[in-house]
Each structure stands twice: as C-alpha cells, then as structure tokens.
Amino acid sequence: MRRKLIAGNWKMNFTSEEEVTNFMVNLVPGMLADVLVCPPSIWLYMLKNSNCFIGAQDVSPHALGAHTGDIAASQLKAMGCKYVIVGHSERRTDHNETDELVKQKAQAVIDAGMIAIICVGETLAQRELGITEEVVTTQVFRSVPENATPANTVIAYEPVWAIGTGKNATPDDAQAMHKIVRAQIAKQLSQGTADSMRILYGGSMKPANAAGLLAMPDIDGGLIGGASLLVDDFNSIIDMVQ
Ligand code: PGA
Image (tube, rainbow, N blue to C red):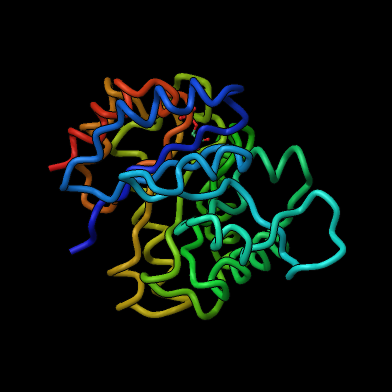
C-alpha cells in the first residue's frame, strides 16, 4: 500500500513571517496522507516544529564549502527537512538544469538521509510531437539514481504545459503516464521498487480536480503549486485523500 503524499510547493511566494504563520496555523494535515510543505528556504526555520513534513525546493549537488548562494543537503537536513524537490521544470528551464545535475542533486538528498522528489514532465511542444513517453522515460532513466528506493525517492510527473496554467492533465491521461513511469522504474530498478515507489501528479491540481486525479490507481499524491498558497484549498485537497 502506497501512502499518499500531498505536497505543497510554495515556489517564490510569501514575503512576511505573518503570511507564513497565517498559513501554518490554519493548516490541517489530517491522518490519511503524508502532508508536506516546501517553502522558500528562508522560511524553513519557521516551519521547523510544525505539524507536517517540511521540504526544500532545491539543493546544491555539492557538499559543504565554497559554493556561494547554494544550500547543502546536510544544511537542509539540519533545518528539519525530510524531503527535497529536485529537477522541477522551472529549475530545468530557468537554470538550465540537466538530467545529470538533477541526478547528482537527488543523490545528495539521498546521501543526507532525506527523500528526493524527482520531477519529470514533457513540454507542450513535445506532447504535440507525440514524444511524451520517450521524453519522460528518458528523464526518469537519466535523473533517478541507481540506489533509489521507495524509502528515499518519490517521482513527480508534472507535464510542463499544465504547471501554473490552470490546465490539468485529465485523470486518464495522467494515469497513463504514471503507469509508464512506474514501468520505467521497474525496468531500470526492480518491479518491487516500482510497486512501492510513490508517483505524484503535479500541474494545476486544485480542489476542483484533485479527487478525480487522486482516485487513479497509479497517482499517489500531488505536487501542488498555486493551490498550495491558499490554505483552505490545500486543506480541502488533503481532505480528499481517502
Ligand atoms: P501548479 O504548480 O499547481 O501551480 O501548476 C505545480 C508545480 O509546479 O509543482
């Protein structure tokens, strides 16, 4: 049985302690899912003793040392992080992150004893060219470390055309891709690993569509951007996990 994970990715939002506090005091994690909030790193200290898991949105591939502006996995761990998102499409695009770098970051997260959430997903142009499956399985092949297990790794399938656009993949389309990702994990790691590894859907998940997506057999939770900024919306998605 894969326990569902409802993960909020605040991205680069919230500019005051007051906004963060207001969100956190109203968050109701419930009992049926693992609930994760990934704030901008500057706010991690405020979430340290909260009633949900906390995570970071990125990590340095390097250990401690002379890497100005970077944050090491061991530092995120020390701040209470349990999860770290790596390879989000916004980082792949804004910072030219390659699958090879994403894999190094995932490895740093795993080595530090945390759980890597490795993001993959096709662009609209790739979908229209009919190469979605090839693009996504290649990203999984190149980004997921050989020692990934269900205990140290989560995959997030996030079609780029659905992120922040209000357009989500239909439950059937998302399910089909999750099945393909799971089959790829079985091929490159093992069937047992694939059966137990959680695969999240991300891309305009919101209260209006979350129940349908979360009901699909291979969708093990959500990586939620916009709807994770409104605590009522985030709570209601958490509530949909049965
Ligand atoms: P969105 O973002 O829910 O705003 O589409 C999802 C994500 O980028 O993780």
